[in-house]
Length: 295
Image 1 (spheres, rainbow, N blue to C red):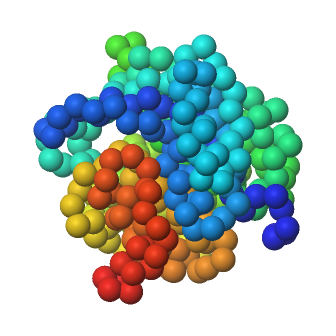
Image 2 (cartoon, rainbow, N blue to C red):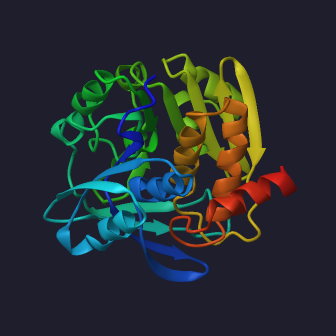
């Protein structure tokens, strides 16, 4: 794959204005997979593009990323995606998600003129990034990566995000190189509770690598091998954005390292992210230090 492309990684997805409700209280956070992921990739020294849709009143997110050195390609829409994340217990995988507004679907033109070594599709719900956009990415000389949440999550009539088995998964997964999922999504797609079995079954649909997150860490299935690394945050404050950060850091490291090394890197970087609300804002040296001392 070419190494002289304009970007190392391009991350796409709607900005989400998140209201997080948990036993610790209520707070507002600027979310969206593109936002969490771009923060992770740029601190690694990569050339990063972020492609998003949001209301103009939320453009501070665009400005923040640009100050960090990310090239942002926003499309301003009447409303941003508004999401409520309710954590009823201390189990961080037990949460109820609901949506009150959406910024709408991406169009192929939003990615057509952007060249990157890897494209990460980080949508929030089904319908945000459809096959026409994926087909545009497949035309490029690029690694196509997708987060399953943008396909298995649908909005029910009450506005709640629910998990669907995604009967049409073959049409998308056959075009994907790396698939990110979490333990809940993996079971929804395969009917399998065992993580390793679920990861292997998902790879049979086409993705060469599966990155699966769960409350204790990350599991990767690549080239017939399993790799695992634990999450080791000093304290768990920022669960939201865990998977977004993990897949962006995995892919960013995978451009220059083995699947095994990328697994450890992603677990360490995500651990540090979870020590605070919002995207990671710590220096890359903290990730390297954690790997040296704990992994």
